[in-house]
Image (cartoon, rainbow, N blue to C red; front, side):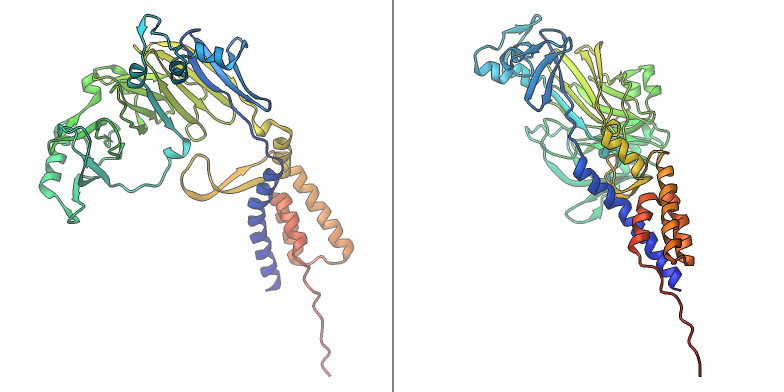
Length: 423
Protein backbone atom coordinates (compact mmCIF):
# COMPACT_ATOMS: atom_id res chain seq x y z
CA UNK A 1 0.00 0.00 0.00
CA UNK A 2 2.83 2.40 0.85
CA UNK A 3 4.28 1.99 -2.65
CA UNK A 4 0.93 2.83 -4.24
CA UNK A 5 0.59 5.98 -2.11
CA UNK A 6 4.13 7.13 -2.94
CA UNK A 7 3.58 6.64 -6.68
CA UNK A 8 0.28 8.52 -6.44
CA UNK A 9 2.04 11.40 -4.66
CA UNK A 10 4.74 11.33 -7.33
CA UNK A 11 2.19 11.67 -10.15
CA UNK A 12 0.32 14.44 -8.34
CA UNK A 13 3.53 16.36 -7.64
CA UNK A 14 4.63 15.93 -11.25
CA UNK A 15 1.37 17.41 -12.54
CA UNK A 16 1.60 20.41 -10.21
CA UNK A 17 5.26 21.00 -11.03
CA UNK A 18 4.60 20.83 -14.79
CA UNK A 19 2.55 23.99 -14.39
CA UNK A 20 4.39 25.94 -11.71
CA UNK A 21 8.02 25.27 -12.65
CA UNK A 22 7.66 26.70 -16.20
CA UNK A 23 5.53 29.53 -14.80
CA UNK A 24 8.26 30.46 -12.33
CA UNK A 25 10.91 30.15 -15.02
CA UNK A 26 9.13 32.57 -17.36
CA UNK A 27 8.45 35.04 -14.55
CA UNK A 28 12.19 35.15 -13.98
CA UNK A 29 13.41 35.11 -17.59
CA UNK A 30 10.57 36.38 -19.77
CA UNK A 31 11.33 39.27 -22.10
CA UNK A 32 8.66 41.54 -23.56
CA UNK A 33 8.66 41.57 -27.35
CA UNK A 34 7.22 44.77 -28.82
CA UNK A 35 5.82 44.33 -32.31
CA UNK A 36 5.64 47.44 -34.50
CA UNK A 37 2.33 49.21 -34.97
CA UNK A 38 1.73 49.28 -38.70
CA UNK A 39 -0.30 51.88 -40.61
CA UNK A 40 -0.57 52.88 -44.25
CA UNK A 41 0.61 56.33 -45.31
CA UNK A 42 -1.73 58.11 -47.71
CA UNK A 43 1.10 60.51 -48.58
CA UNK A 44 3.80 57.93 -49.32
CA UNK A 45 1.31 55.27 -50.45
CA UNK A 46 3.41 52.84 -48.48
CA UNK A 47 3.55 51.29 -45.04
CA UNK A 48 4.79 53.23 -42.03
CA UNK A 49 5.55 52.06 -38.51
CA UNK A 50 5.68 52.99 -34.88
CA UNK A 51 8.63 50.93 -33.63
CA UNK A 52 8.87 50.60 -29.86
CA UNK A 53 12.41 50.46 -28.49
CA UNK A 54 14.00 50.91 -25.08
CA UNK A 55 15.01 54.45 -26.01
CA UNK A 56 11.43 55.32 -27.05
CA UNK A 57 9.28 55.27 -30.17
CA UNK A 58 10.90 55.42 -33.60
CA UNK A 59 8.84 56.61 -36.55
CA UNK A 60 9.85 54.87 -39.77
CA UNK A 61 8.67 53.92 -43.23
CA UNK A 62 9.21 50.65 -45.04
CA UNK A 63 12.46 51.79 -46.64
CA UNK A 64 13.95 52.44 -43.18
CA UNK A 65 13.80 56.24 -43.26
CA UNK A 66 13.32 57.69 -39.77
CA UNK A 67 11.04 60.66 -39.09
CA UNK A 68 10.45 63.06 -36.28
CA UNK A 69 7.06 62.78 -34.60
CA UNK A 70 5.81 65.93 -36.34
CA UNK A 71 7.04 64.80 -39.77
CA UNK A 72 5.49 61.36 -39.23
CA UNK A 73 2.12 62.92 -38.45
CA UNK A 74 2.26 64.79 -41.76
CA UNK A 75 2.80 61.61 -43.81
CA UNK A 76 -0.02 59.82 -41.94
CA UNK A 77 -2.73 62.51 -41.88
CA UNK A 78 -5.69 60.11 -41.79
CA UNK A 79 -4.26 58.42 -38.70
CA UNK A 80 -3.18 61.60 -36.89
CA UNK A 81 -5.92 63.91 -38.14
CA UNK A 82 -6.93 65.21 -34.70
CA UNK A 83 -3.43 66.47 -33.91
CA UNK A 84 -3.05 67.97 -37.39
CA UNK A 85 -6.44 69.65 -37.10
CA UNK A 86 -5.46 71.04 -33.69
CA UNK A 87 -2.24 72.42 -35.21
CA UNK A 88 -4.08 73.81 -38.25
CA UNK A 89 -2.14 71.50 -40.59
CA UNK A 90 -4.83 69.08 -41.75
CA UNK A 91 -4.92 69.15 -45.58
CA UNK A 92 -8.17 70.00 -47.37
CA UNK A 93 -7.79 67.03 -49.68
CA UNK A 94 -5.62 63.95 -50.13
CA UNK A 95 -5.14 62.48 -53.60
CA UNK A 96 -8.14 64.41 -54.88
CA UNK A 97 -10.48 63.32 -52.08
CA UNK A 98 -11.91 66.09 -49.85
CA UNK A 99 -10.83 65.78 -46.23
CA UNK A 100 -12.34 67.10 -43.01
CA UNK A 101 -12.62 65.79 -39.49
CA UNK A 102 -16.31 65.01 -40.12
CA UNK A 103 -15.59 63.03 -43.28
CA UNK A 104 -12.75 61.12 -41.60
CA UNK A 105 -14.95 60.16 -38.61
CA UNK A 106 -17.84 59.07 -40.81
CA UNK A 107 -15.64 56.91 -43.04
CA UNK A 108 -13.65 55.24 -40.27
CA UNK A 109 -13.94 51.50 -39.83
CA UNK A 110 -12.39 49.59 -36.96
CA UNK A 111 -12.64 45.91 -36.01
CA UNK A 112 -10.61 43.65 -33.76
CA UNK A 113 -10.72 39.88 -33.40
CA UNK A 114 -8.65 38.01 -30.82
CA UNK A 115 -7.93 34.29 -30.98
CA UNK A 116 -9.97 33.28 -27.87
CA UNK A 117 -13.11 34.80 -29.41
CA UNK A 118 -13.20 31.91 -31.89
CA UNK A 119 -13.57 29.39 -29.04
CA UNK A 120 -15.47 31.11 -26.27
CA UNK A 121 -18.26 29.93 -23.96
CA UNK A 122 -21.60 31.54 -24.57
CA UNK A 123 -25.34 31.15 -24.06
CA UNK A 124 -27.37 30.45 -27.21
CA UNK A 125 -29.89 33.21 -26.47
CA UNK A 126 -29.73 36.24 -28.75
CA UNK A 127 -31.56 39.51 -27.98
CA UNK A 128 -33.66 40.79 -30.86
CA UNK A 129 -33.76 44.41 -31.96
CA UNK A 130 -36.10 45.89 -34.50
CA UNK A 131 -34.06 47.14 -37.44
CA UNK A 132 -36.78 49.42 -38.86
CA UNK A 133 -38.48 51.28 -36.03
CA UNK A 134 -37.72 54.68 -37.52
CA UNK A 135 -36.18 55.84 -34.25
CA UNK A 136 -32.76 57.42 -33.97
CA UNK A 137 -31.58 55.05 -31.24
CA UNK A 138 -31.91 51.29 -31.19
CA UNK A 139 -33.90 49.69 -28.41
CA UNK A 140 -34.15 46.16 -27.12
CA UNK A 141 -37.53 44.47 -27.59
CA UNK A 142 -37.26 42.15 -24.61
CA UNK A 143 -37.44 39.19 -26.98
CA UNK A 144 -34.70 36.59 -27.30
CA UNK A 145 -34.04 34.19 -30.16
CA UNK A 146 -32.93 30.59 -29.67
CA UNK A 147 -32.02 28.97 -33.02
CA UNK A 148 -31.91 25.21 -33.33
CA UNK A 149 -34.22 22.77 -35.11
CA UNK A 150 -36.53 25.76 -35.37
CA UNK A 151 -36.49 29.39 -34.31
CA UNK A 152 -37.80 29.86 -30.80
CA UNK A 153 -38.60 33.33 -29.51
CA UNK A 154 -38.87 34.00 -25.79
CA UNK A 155 -40.42 36.95 -23.99
CA UNK A 156 -38.02 37.95 -21.23
CA UNK A 157 -40.77 39.69 -19.27
CA UNK A 158 -43.08 36.70 -18.98
CA UNK A 159 -40.46 33.95 -19.59
CA UNK A 160 -42.79 32.37 -22.13
CA UNK A 161 -42.33 31.14 -25.68
CA UNK A 162 -43.82 33.30 -28.42
CA UNK A 163 -45.00 30.31 -30.44
CA UNK A 164 -46.81 32.09 -33.27
CA UNK A 165 -44.05 34.61 -33.84
CA UNK A 166 -41.37 31.93 -33.63
CA UNK A 167 -43.24 29.91 -36.24
CA UNK A 168 -43.29 32.93 -38.60
CA UNK A 169 -39.53 33.33 -38.22
CA UNK A 170 -38.97 29.61 -38.81
CA UNK A 171 -41.16 29.60 -41.94
CA UNK A 172 -39.45 32.73 -43.29
CA UNK A 173 -36.06 31.05 -43.06
CA UNK A 174 -37.34 27.76 -44.51
CA UNK A 175 -38.95 29.58 -47.45
CA UNK A 176 -35.57 31.21 -48.18
CA UNK A 177 -33.93 27.77 -48.37
CA UNK A 178 -32.56 27.49 -44.83
CA UNK A 179 -31.86 23.86 -43.86
CA UNK A 180 -32.52 23.29 -40.17
CA UNK A 181 -31.03 22.83 -37.63
CA UNK A 182 -29.09 26.07 -37.37
CA UNK A 183 -25.45 25.37 -36.54
CA UNK A 184 -24.31 28.88 -35.54
CA UNK A 185 -25.55 32.43 -35.06
CA UNK A 186 -23.48 35.62 -35.04
CA UNK A 187 -24.45 39.19 -34.29
CA UNK A 188 -23.62 42.31 -32.33
CA UNK A 189 -26.05 42.30 -29.41
CA UNK A 190 -25.68 45.88 -28.22
CA UNK A 191 -27.75 49.02 -28.73
CA UNK A 192 -24.58 51.14 -28.94
CA UNK A 193 -24.36 50.97 -32.73
CA UNK A 194 -25.67 53.13 -35.58
CA UNK A 195 -28.00 50.47 -37.03
CA UNK A 196 -28.80 46.77 -36.66
CA UNK A 197 -27.65 43.99 -39.00
CA UNK A 198 -29.61 41.39 -37.07
CA UNK A 199 -27.98 37.96 -37.03
CA UNK A 200 -26.06 35.89 -39.54
CA UNK A 201 -27.13 32.25 -39.28
CA UNK A 202 -25.38 29.19 -40.70
CA UNK A 203 -27.61 26.27 -41.63
CA UNK A 204 -26.87 22.55 -41.62
CA UNK A 205 -25.53 22.75 -45.19
CA UNK A 206 -23.05 25.48 -44.18
CA UNK A 207 -24.92 28.22 -46.08
CA UNK A 208 -25.06 31.74 -44.68
CA UNK A 209 -28.32 33.64 -44.11
CA UNK A 210 -29.09 36.99 -42.53
CA UNK A 211 -32.12 37.29 -40.27
CA UNK A 212 -33.47 40.66 -39.15
CA UNK A 213 -36.65 41.78 -37.47
CA UNK A 214 -38.32 44.74 -39.18
CA UNK A 215 -41.46 46.18 -37.62
CA UNK A 216 -41.95 42.97 -35.72
CA UNK A 217 -41.72 40.68 -38.75
CA UNK A 218 -38.86 38.46 -40.01
CA UNK A 219 -36.75 39.65 -42.91
CA UNK A 220 -34.41 37.05 -44.42
CA UNK A 221 -31.54 37.63 -46.84
CA UNK A 222 -29.37 35.01 -48.52
CA UNK A 223 -26.10 36.86 -49.29
CA UNK A 224 -24.98 34.37 -51.95
CA UNK A 225 -28.16 34.97 -53.97
CA UNK A 226 -28.03 38.75 -53.61
CA UNK A 227 -24.38 38.86 -54.62
CA UNK A 228 -24.50 36.13 -57.30
CA UNK A 229 -20.72 35.93 -56.91
CA UNK A 230 -19.30 32.41 -57.39
CA UNK A 231 -16.80 33.13 -54.59
CA UNK A 232 -19.60 32.46 -52.08
CA UNK A 233 -19.24 28.77 -52.91
CA UNK A 234 -15.76 28.88 -51.35
CA UNK A 235 -16.96 30.40 -48.07
CA UNK A 236 -17.65 27.98 -45.23
CA UNK A 237 -17.92 30.07 -42.06
CA UNK A 238 -16.16 29.09 -38.89
CA UNK A 239 -16.66 32.46 -37.19
CA UNK A 240 -18.35 35.71 -38.19
CA UNK A 241 -17.59 39.10 -36.69
CA UNK A 242 -20.44 41.60 -36.95
CA UNK A 243 -19.78 45.20 -35.99
CA UNK A 244 -22.03 47.80 -37.53
CA UNK A 245 -20.03 50.84 -38.67
CA UNK A 246 -21.27 54.37 -39.37
CA UNK A 247 -20.46 54.16 -43.11
CA UNK A 248 -22.59 50.98 -43.48
CA UNK A 249 -20.03 49.48 -45.85
CA UNK A 250 -18.65 46.40 -44.09
CA UNK A 251 -21.43 43.89 -43.42
CA UNK A 252 -19.30 41.36 -41.60
CA UNK A 253 -15.91 39.67 -41.42
CA UNK A 254 -15.84 35.89 -41.96
CA UNK A 255 -13.22 33.39 -40.81
CA UNK A 256 -13.55 30.27 -42.93
CA UNK A 257 -13.19 26.64 -41.93
CA UNK A 258 -9.98 26.62 -44.01
CA UNK A 259 -8.63 29.63 -42.01
CA UNK A 260 -9.38 31.99 -44.88
CA UNK A 261 -10.45 35.57 -44.14
CA UNK A 262 -13.28 37.28 -46.02
CA UNK A 263 -14.87 40.73 -45.96
CA UNK A 264 -18.51 41.06 -46.98
CA UNK A 265 -19.06 44.61 -48.23
CA UNK A 266 -21.82 46.81 -49.57
CA UNK A 267 -25.52 46.37 -50.23
CA UNK A 268 -24.67 43.66 -52.73
CA UNK A 269 -22.90 41.49 -50.13
CA UNK A 270 -19.74 41.36 -52.20
CA UNK A 271 -17.24 38.79 -50.84
CA UNK A 272 -13.61 39.96 -50.76
CA UNK A 273 -10.92 37.46 -49.86
CA UNK A 274 -7.99 38.72 -47.80
CA UNK A 275 -4.93 36.71 -48.95
CA UNK A 276 -3.09 36.28 -45.65
CA UNK A 277 -0.10 33.94 -45.60
CA UNK A 278 0.54 33.89 -41.85
CA UNK A 279 -2.92 33.89 -40.28
CA UNK A 280 -3.39 31.15 -37.67
CA UNK A 281 -6.83 31.65 -36.05
CA UNK A 282 -5.91 29.88 -32.80
CA UNK A 283 -2.78 32.02 -32.34
CA UNK A 284 -3.34 35.32 -34.15
CA UNK A 285 -5.07 38.60 -33.45
CA UNK A 286 -6.69 40.40 -36.36
CA UNK A 287 -7.21 44.14 -36.75
CA UNK A 288 -9.15 45.93 -39.50
CA UNK A 289 -8.88 49.69 -39.88
CA UNK A 290 -10.44 51.66 -42.71
CA UNK A 291 -10.55 55.31 -43.68
CA UNK A 292 -11.74 57.46 -46.56
CA UNK A 293 -9.03 56.08 -48.89
CA UNK A 294 -7.96 52.63 -47.73
CA UNK A 295 -8.86 49.51 -45.76
CA UNK A 296 -6.00 47.73 -44.02
CA UNK A 297 -6.09 44.38 -42.25
CA UNK A 298 -3.27 43.23 -39.97
CA UNK A 299 -2.72 39.86 -38.30
CA UNK A 300 -0.15 39.20 -35.62
CA UNK A 301 1.03 36.11 -33.77
CA UNK A 302 4.20 35.19 -31.90
CA UNK A 303 6.18 34.75 -35.12
CA UNK A 304 4.75 37.10 -37.73
CA UNK A 305 3.01 40.38 -38.38
CA UNK A 306 1.33 40.74 -41.76
CA UNK A 307 -0.64 43.65 -43.25
CA UNK A 308 -2.73 43.88 -46.43
CA UNK A 309 -4.16 47.09 -47.88
CA UNK A 310 -7.13 47.57 -50.22
CA UNK A 311 -8.48 50.72 -51.81
CA UNK A 312 -12.13 51.65 -51.25
CA UNK A 313 -13.10 49.67 -54.34
CA UNK A 314 -11.53 46.69 -52.52
CA UNK A 315 -8.79 46.14 -55.05
CA UNK A 316 -5.58 44.83 -53.50
CA UNK A 317 -2.94 47.58 -53.26
CA UNK A 318 -0.04 46.29 -51.19
CA UNK A 319 1.12 43.72 -48.66
CA UNK A 320 3.77 43.65 -45.96
CA UNK A 321 4.98 40.91 -43.61
CA UNK A 322 7.68 40.93 -40.95
CA UNK A 323 9.13 38.13 -38.85
CA UNK A 324 8.98 38.92 -35.15
CA UNK A 325 11.56 37.95 -32.51
CA UNK A 326 9.85 34.99 -30.86
CA UNK A 327 10.59 34.02 -27.27
CA UNK A 328 10.83 30.41 -28.42
CA UNK A 329 13.81 31.29 -30.63
CA UNK A 330 15.55 33.35 -27.95
CA UNK A 331 18.13 31.67 -25.64
CA UNK A 332 15.70 31.44 -22.73
CA UNK A 333 13.14 29.83 -25.02
CA UNK A 334 15.58 27.25 -26.33
CA UNK A 335 16.68 26.41 -22.78
CA UNK A 336 13.05 26.04 -21.68
CA UNK A 337 12.26 23.65 -24.53
CA UNK A 338 15.09 21.35 -23.37
CA UNK A 339 14.53 21.81 -19.65
CA UNK A 340 10.78 21.10 -19.71
CA UNK A 341 9.57 18.02 -21.62
CA UNK A 342 6.07 19.48 -21.56
CA UNK A 343 4.20 22.32 -19.94
CA UNK A 344 0.73 22.19 -18.46
CA UNK A 345 -1.44 25.31 -18.67
CA UNK A 346 -4.99 25.95 -17.48
CA UNK A 347 -5.63 28.67 -20.06
CA UNK A 348 -4.88 28.79 -23.75
CA UNK A 349 -4.22 31.84 -25.91
CA UNK A 350 -6.52 30.30 -28.52
CA UNK A 351 -9.51 29.52 -26.30
CA UNK A 352 -11.75 31.23 -23.81
CA UNK A 353 -12.29 27.99 -21.89
CA UNK A 354 -10.43 26.93 -18.76
CA UNK A 355 -9.02 23.43 -19.12
CA UNK A 356 -5.85 21.39 -19.34
CA UNK A 357 -3.59 22.49 -22.20
CA UNK A 358 -0.29 20.67 -22.66
CA UNK A 359 2.55 21.92 -24.83
CA UNK A 360 5.46 19.63 -25.63
CA UNK A 361 9.11 20.64 -25.47
CA UNK A 362 12.08 19.83 -27.66
CA UNK A 363 13.05 16.21 -28.47
CA UNK A 364 16.35 17.03 -26.74
CA UNK A 365 14.45 17.12 -23.45
CA UNK A 366 14.25 13.32 -23.63
CA UNK A 367 18.04 13.12 -23.29
CA UNK A 368 17.88 15.30 -20.18
CA UNK A 369 15.10 13.10 -18.80
CA UNK A 370 17.23 9.99 -19.36
CA UNK A 371 20.24 11.61 -17.66
CA UNK A 372 18.13 12.66 -14.64
CA UNK A 373 16.63 9.17 -14.35
CA UNK A 374 20.08 7.49 -14.45
CA UNK A 375 21.41 9.99 -11.91
CA UNK A 376 18.51 9.28 -9.56
CA UNK A 377 18.99 5.51 -9.87
CA UNK A 378 22.73 5.82 -9.16
CA UNK A 379 22.29 7.90 -6.02
CA UNK A 380 19.41 5.76 -4.75
CA UNK A 381 21.37 2.51 -5.15
CA UNK A 382 24.47 3.99 -3.50
CA UNK A 383 22.31 5.27 -0.65
CA UNK A 384 20.85 1.82 -0.18
CA UNK A 385 17.23 2.90 -0.72
CA UNK A 386 16.01 1.17 -3.86
CA UNK A 387 12.42 0.14 -3.18
CA UNK A 388 9.76 -0.96 -5.63
CA UNK A 389 8.14 2.45 -5.70
CA UNK A 390 11.49 4.12 -6.45
CA UNK A 391 12.07 1.75 -9.34
CA UNK A 392 8.66 2.67 -10.81
CA UNK A 393 9.23 6.39 -10.23
CA UNK A 394 12.61 6.16 -11.95
CA UNK A 395 10.92 4.73 -15.04
CA UNK A 396 8.24 7.41 -14.89
CA UNK A 397 11.01 10.02 -14.84
CA UNK A 398 11.69 9.27 -18.52
CA UNK A 399 8.49 10.99 -19.76
CA UNK A 400 8.25 13.48 -16.88
CA UNK A 401 11.85 14.77 -16.93
CA UNK A 402 12.75 17.50 -14.47
CA UNK A 403 9.25 17.47 -12.98
CA UNK A 404 9.64 13.80 -12.05
CA UNK A 405 13.20 14.42 -10.85
CA UNK A 406 12.10 17.12 -8.39
CA UNK A 407 9.12 15.05 -7.25
CA UNK A 408 11.34 11.96 -6.80
CA UNK A 409 13.69 13.72 -4.38
CA UNK A 410 10.91 15.55 -2.53
CA UNK A 411 9.21 12.30 -1.56
CA UNK A 412 11.15 10.58 1.24
CA UNK A 413 12.11 6.95 0.68
CA UNK A 414 9.97 4.26 2.24
CA UNK A 415 11.22 3.08 5.62
CA UNK A 416 12.63 -0.45 5.53
CA UNK A 417 10.23 -3.08 6.84
CA UNK A 418 11.28 -4.41 10.26
CA UNK A 419 10.75 -8.06 11.16
CA UNK A 420 9.38 -8.59 14.64
CA UNK A 421 10.57 -11.56 16.72
CA UNK A 422 7.77 -13.39 18.43
CA UNK A 423 8.87 -14.88 21.73
